[in-house]
Length: 103
Image (tube, rainbow, N blue to C red; front, side, top):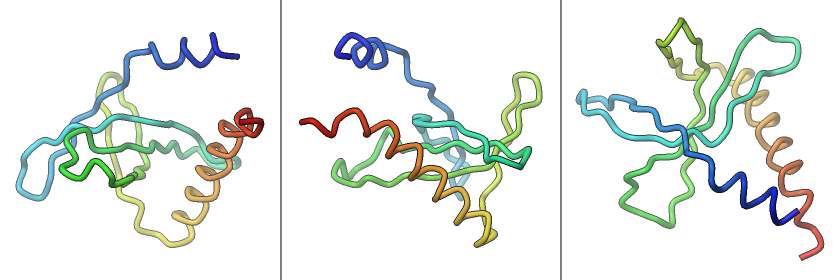
């Protein structure tokens, strides 16, 4: 198991740039991509790279579409859609953490 964990950590993180309200691009690391069952929608969870507060575990979720090399991000504004995304994310995180219960 330790070898699998090391291999995962050695992968290059996927970095995307998202403009803020003032048009300044901020760097985010993609921590997870997933699709919701029964839907054609794809989602990604990202965390800011240049966080001034390192203790902040701020995670952002976006619906996304890929058009060739272009990536289009959409804010999740619908409460029902947000609940589905949050539930799926929590389930996936629980599955990933499942192997660490012995510690």
